[in-house]
Amino acid sequence: MLRLTCLVRRKAGTSPEEFHRYWRDRHGPLVASTRSGSYVVRYEQHHRALEDYPAEDDGGFDGVTVQWFRSRADYVAHVSAPDFQQVWADIERFLDTERLVYVLTDETVVVVDGEQ
Image 1 (cartoon, rainbow, N blue to C red):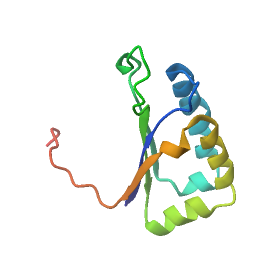
Image 2: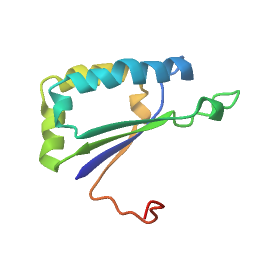
Image 3: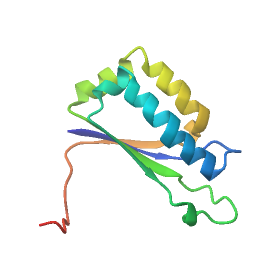
């Protein structure tokens, strides 16, 4: 399993509430509806808690997204699908893409699992 983890920041001039609403209600469903999104096994959005925002913008991250793929080939197919451009255009509407931080990782290493 391959995972794409992105640390995301909202575009300047967008409130945290606007950002989180758009990400959850518009972008997530868009990804799920595309051919590009069909290569994603699991798509997670981890939103920064609104209570965590200081009175002044701290320039920090607004959340983390994790997308799971069965293989590197599926990841390549995801970003190569013709409708990925539609997804990317939407990303540019609400994310600060200049400061987008991401990493592709392989199998998960579990250090602690309280369920066992």
